Amino acid sequence: MSDYFALNRAHWDEVTGIHVASPFYRTEAFRRGEMVLDPIAVEGVGDVAGKRLLHLQCHFGLDTLSLARLGADVTGLDFSGPALKEARALSAETGVPGRFIEADVLDAPADLADFDIVFASWGAICWIPDIPAWMRTAARALRPGGRLVLIDGHPMMVCMAGEGAAPFSPQLPYQTDAPIMMEDIGDYTDRNAKVAANRTAEWMHGVGRILNAAIDAGLVIRRFDELDRVPWHALAPLEKCDAHYWRLPAGVPTFPLSFRLLAERG
Image 1 (cartoon, rainbow, N blue to C red):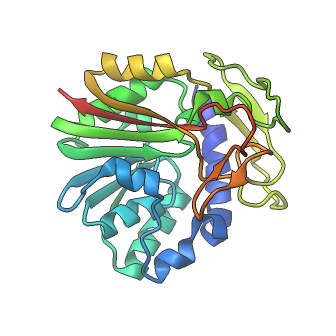
Image 2 (cartoon, helix red, strand yellow):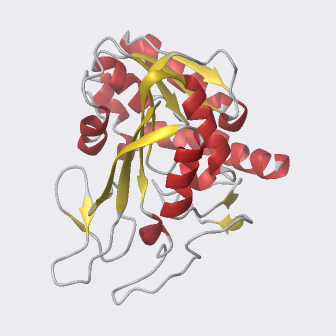
């Protein structure tokens, strides 16, 4: 497993600079003073003013610091040193406070505790080999009554990845235990980008596995939404539906594109 960890970390270390500079991530808008967290996430976290919030797999901290702009006392955790260097620089440049910790999310520091909210979104859990362990990290970090907000691509959509026009058929298994080895050209923000560390390991997790992992970690499911949009062009037929999201065009058989899980520590 350490080999997969090193492989993935090398990839994220390299692509961080591409992401910071890409319009996909709206870093310049954040520098101008905007809050760039997407509406599905904003609705999911609710009122964060004065709340202690832990962002798991925070990448270079753009969403973390957007949550700080909404009034949260934020801590971001990620395994990429270069990404966290950019997060700290963005915090210092904009004057938006945030604490950033370098660690494996499955081996998080024991002193990460008593948070009101644990948050993760968009492309987080496909990098996780052990969802029960991820949920235990989230549960341990929450105070009693604290909330988990997890938003991600729906497993139904993810298994169609790379598929062309409808009718759709699965291109990847709905759920796996062994890693799926990926070798991409470019980066999802720029297909022409030159990325040397382009080989990664990913895992597929079905809805049942995700929900049962949360329950087994002692979390109480409060809401599970299956949504019709994602904030990237995840499948070829998707159409832009507003400034933030893509969805299936009218007349195409529909299936969920994303999900939002709200759970509470008992």
